[in-house]
Image (cartoon, rainbow, N blue to C red; front, side, top):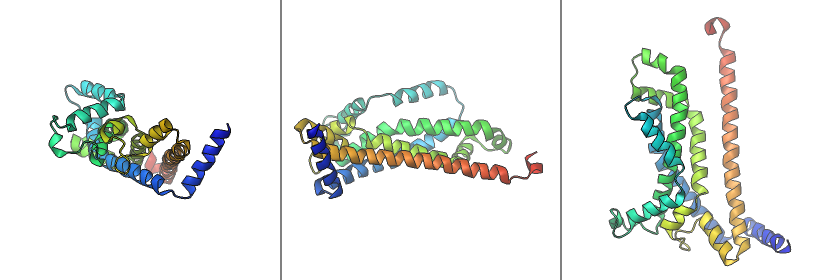
Length: 246
């Protein structure tokens, strides 16, 4: 217990003193996860919104595949990206293996199904509520997906935050494709695993505390967005005249 207390005290000192090594790892971790989320959300929001309104042969199989990808272990994603970026792989000429770009690619592939599936569910629920009205106005599937996604933009913000939380807490894929190289590809999760195995508990605890703070902040933001959206929706409903609502 004394060892844990001493390690926790040292960890707090490292975090509060803005230790250069600690700050470098945190900045790199945030940069990798933010870049991956931007790429994944750019494609996932569009694809998920389209899947939410489109009806086509094989849609059930596509959704089953999407749900399967949600459960793929991160180490499997890391292995696939490693094979793609290795010298004998189809993307080996890029020279991205054990680099910042490789970690971004791995996290993008890992987060993309999450963004797509959550967006699809949000837009599909909105389609059930308002799709008939849009179809009566002649809106096609592509236009309906854009309009409904914009109408549910505040709900989709929670999707972005959830995706970032998934990315920043990931360890398996970035460990495989990044190599955990000190000063280049070491991020919070891989550093925690390494420092714990080395016995450097203060640095591992400091990184763990910062990671917990980041995840907690994301959850607080998600809850705040939901409450704000509920208040806005409630204000809109109460502002509609009784005659107009009828």
